[in-house]
Length: 349
Image (cartoon, rainbow, N blue to C red; front, side):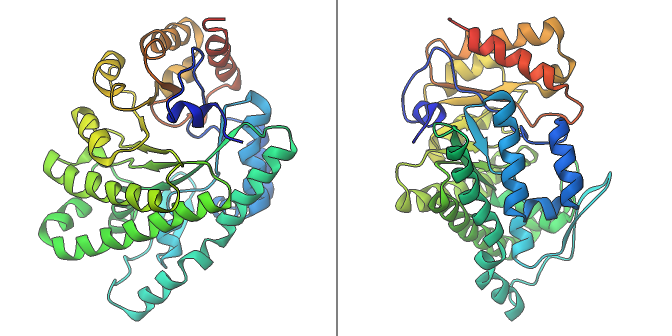
């Protein structure tokens, strides 16, 4: 059964907007830390359908968010393509050498892509079933993927950086090779999202976390164009499934991104003025965001003020999903999440 988030993305307007938070399942929750300790490594957690189901359900049980989002990581895609991946304590993701796209080994890994990701697909099915069993049948389930540009950034620079210079240089100096990588990623991401929908996700989100490092012409080439192809491919198989795009850092290119990709919902980051979002972005499609995660972590009167300001600006005349401008910080007290949810749920009551 499709829930409030799905209906909002498909044209229904609610005075009390649907709400979910990026990274709503994570280290700020004591129950997550307990499960993580049992599971072992972060990748063990991602690749275990039972553990992934458990941590996905934890914030739904505690907060009754309007949507659950698959617990996984965007980097399972390069991992499934044969690139070494590990998560080092205090250092984040570390990737191995970029595979040679011309080798038979890479082609073999591409053919094995869905086999390698079968635990993720099993998790999607398990999460949907468990939501229904626990009485959350109207809670939407979001599947997701990283976007081609953002995944290429990690695959080439091999770790998180501030500006991904190696990737940006390759995109300019060796455009043919870079285009080949983007084409491969566009194809497998489309298939990955389609299979998540096949397994029970009724909404999908595309995270382009590093789109903001690109100048406009390259943003169009490496962010908008591949995303447009993914949206088109998913809609051929699942025309009724809403697709949310989140090109973090896109600034004044958000509007062009929304128009050109034809996504159903637009995630906006913390730096987007909400007055701008209401005037220029909501007329195109529903917007999702954009409370500052540090304001959520700080709590107090400023959290009340910012939450009410976002609600007053974005929920009156346009379709809107309350979320953060990025993921929940690990040091956020759960009580601050409850504080925000109370304001949202009392709004217009």
